[in-house]
Image (cartoon, rainbow, N blue to C red; front, side, top):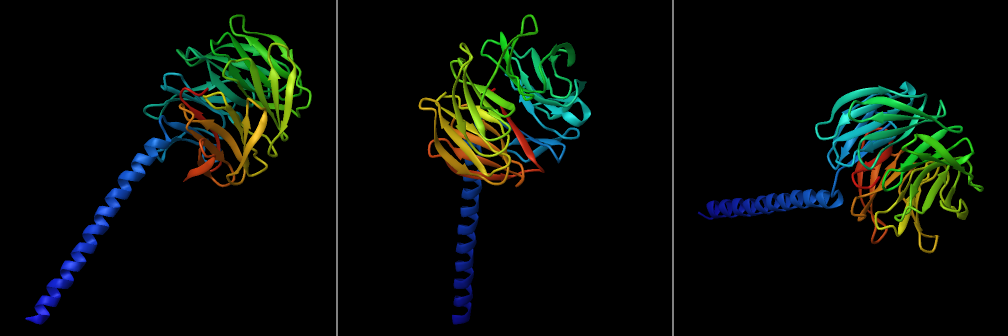
Length: 331
């Protein structure tokens, strides 16, 4: 009788342990899911250069594209994703909802940065190897115009209403200003103090450009006067740069370093240097500015930073050489 009682008691204990384990794991899975939703109020699209793919985060779904998937851009309505392939002089167009390739568009040589206009009708592609901008109509996925520029256009950024586009001229000329109606470069603003203007973003009011070079500098450029307000030393090597949606801060990576630098745009001073891993390049904030996504090229990870504390909240393992990040409502 005693043996039977002990056996029943043991089974009861095991049952309770298993029940608690089951409840704990269900709780954990639910909380991980909620956390992922919290970290990504809208999807983030990460180009994976050496994997020839694009990953839609926070899922682990990756879409196969072509060689050297490099810069990407998402349309304002979230329906179209464009990705440049420099080695094939092409842009890959995807249905961003289904992950299906819609078109392969031939552009100029060594296309790098790509941006979609605020009205979602056109995309500008910086052809670094042929000193030009290819204008793509998204209604047809065809090149409808080519704009000649100074040497080595690298990336482009539209102003809020799409009347102007600013292009970094990595060959050294500075920042080109394109009138989008006439499709002509109407001005080139020199940027003394930079070593090859590389990537850029605009302040919330559109009056200032933040220009990252290929060395370790960010220029704060007044667009009306063409004067450099300040040159800020940041991490080593080229990288992306992003002005957060609240307009208060800018973040830039450093592909030859391991840090992301946070700049206060009111004081034009560095408020935080965050170690994220080897070779951070693409940086982009969530549409609400709550989170900062960083593509860390050499470690094959995407790091999510809390913009309230400037601490790393989560790290995601992704495919080979994550390079650029695109987010809806944060061009």
